[in-house]
Length: 338
Ligand code: PHE
Image (cartoon, rainbow, N blue to C red; front, top):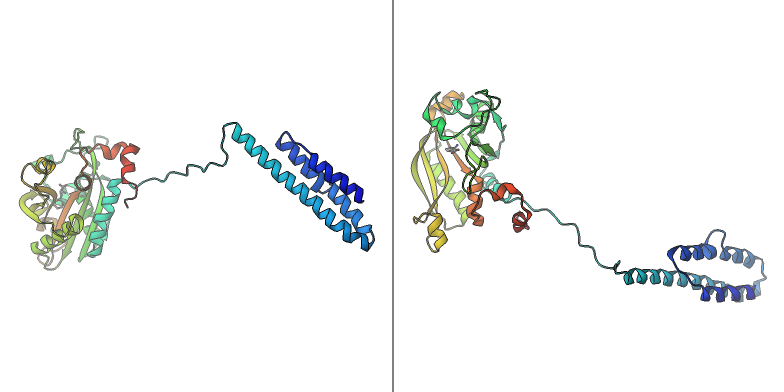
């Protein structure tokens, strides 16, 4: 038995392989279920005790030699792969992660600010009817105010249309709820406009609505000032300019003070230092009444802003079309933003 082990030791030492298959065949021949080691172990059981003390370590050494050989041979084949120009040890490139879309980043931030003030999120359908987009918001039929927003009608039916503003969600929520209500309503809107750097046929708005007893214009102004300071920085100033919307009275447009330090500041603020960010006003009593809320008991304010516009200001993006092209060179610039 001693000789048999000695012979196998020599065989193992001399073994050579020219491929992965041969290494595996070698391993099976020695260590497999019907392999040479198995036979030796069977024979080992039969030998007298004193010989076991000598043969035991020899058997262990043989097994170890086979294992080392197999291990080394695998290394050889890896280095063959290397020689072929493939580097199997090179770390993989990793799976690239997606990024949040800048509109999503800004939408979330705006919603967060209002949620912290106790506003709840509400959403409504993109395909609407005349009542929710216009009539329920005090746009009389044939009123020129309807021309403020070029509407996409679906299937030539004047009562099936794509919403032109998120104010439609105000109407839906007033139908559903009793005051007090404090809501923030993000969503996509559509207008039949020529696509350019400054206009698109679809964009996103965030609408706010607060209805309760004794809601005043001062509440509106303070709420918007707080928002502007959270979003644009603690020293931000705002100003309100009188404006017109059919569903609010009085109405205003809100500007933030942007500054006039650089040439870009001068260009984007048209030399004034101020930038318009949203429209707002006190909910018109006609709107409350049309939606079943008693204007003698309740008052409210509403506001609406374009997410694209605010995002362009925040990141100094010069062309609205970037948002809808999904060019990864553009989107990857927002990696890490959340
Ligand atoms: N819906 C208006 C727009 O699309 C914005 C607005 C909302 C104005 C709420 C006042 C109150 O321009």
